[in-house]
Length: 224
Figure 1 (spheres, rainbow, N blue to C red):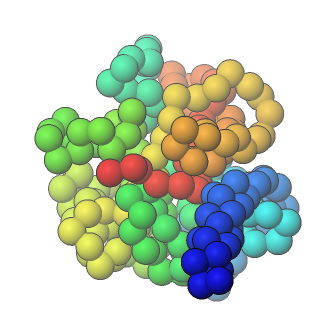
Figure 2: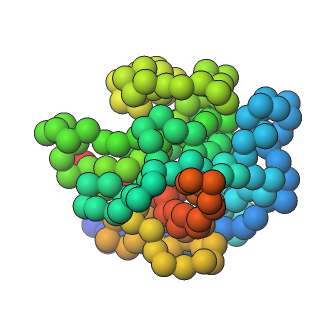
Figure 3: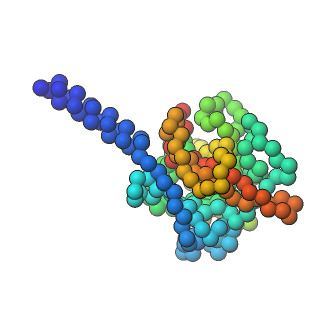
């Protein structure tokens, strides 16, 4: 009888884990600017007036995001295996809000609060091999440690993010190769159990505006 009960209990655990892994994620628009009590006016001027909310199942909010109204982009940029996005390291990309403790792409715990998102490139070294099929990522910074007009050198940016995360590694979100769509959506990469947001932002180069498709892992982590 004990053996049968153990088998049933093990089966129920597996079912529960499978259900949790397969929980659907969805995306909805936030028709409001970031909270003025949490984010400075200088920052709020940088971000779009409409945000994006990622939800798990029907009610739980994973995170909220606001992207810059426009991103300066590299002239003549071409996507390669090494670089997917036309941004400069340290460039301000957006704002992230966790209403409760969240996780980054390395499965590090990140406290609730507001974080700026700045562009980074994963180093090419043995320490990062196999963690992601792409080098492009966004690094999280506590909004109180950042400023809208601040120019970061890469080393200080990474160290400050890691310090805020209470880790030796910066808190980060992984960018993926953008899909060709104009529709806001979130899709599931089943092989990694990643939920990937797709949106389209605006890039500026030579006083001209262009669409910049943008895909970001908003739930799930590296398999290392």
